[in-house]
Amino acid sequence: MAKEKGRKLIAQNKKARHDYHILDTYECGLVLMGTEVKSLRQGRASLADGFVHIDGHEAWLHNVHVPEYSQGTWTNHSARRKRKLLLHRAEIDKLESKSQETGHTIVPLALYFKDGRAKVEIALAKGKKEYDKRQTLREKQDRREADRAMSAARRRQRA
Image 1 (cartoon, helix red, strand yellow):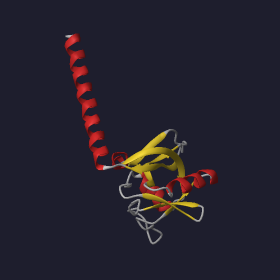
Image 2 (spheres, helix red, strand yellow):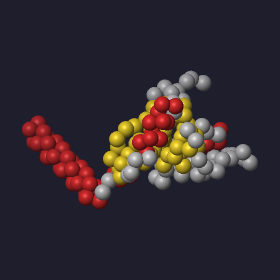
Image 3 (cartoon, helix red, strand yellow):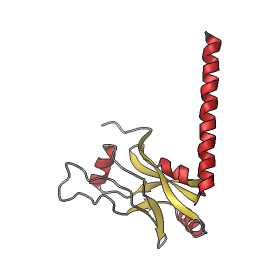
Image 4 (tube, one colour):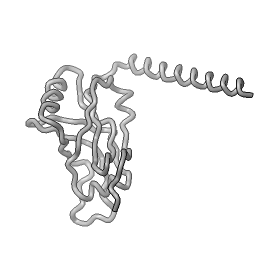
């Protein structure tokens, strides 16, 4: 079998970018069971309620839903178990000190395969206020309207 190349996205947490200001991102590996890998290869996972907690100088991913593998037997994993993240010691120490500041948290942004290995992109984030969320939505709508207007102008120019 040929070795996989590139990046294959499994799950993305779009709500995190809406609810938080992303300050810094990290790519880290995951410690998984065999049935979890098979379930992820089927493209099934949810990062919606996920968060990262640093406990005893180790990073743990909590509340990420990886459904049980359909052909699994008694060796199947539990869907919402905590999973260890593989990071360098300096990165863990930096995340630990920053996450203890008021309003800061660590959230997963994306779960993907990179060259055949499961990776998760996590971010050090600061919670947005309600007015920040409205401002972000307004900017997004304005950008979308401007893009539509420019594409319509280009179409009229070609014709």
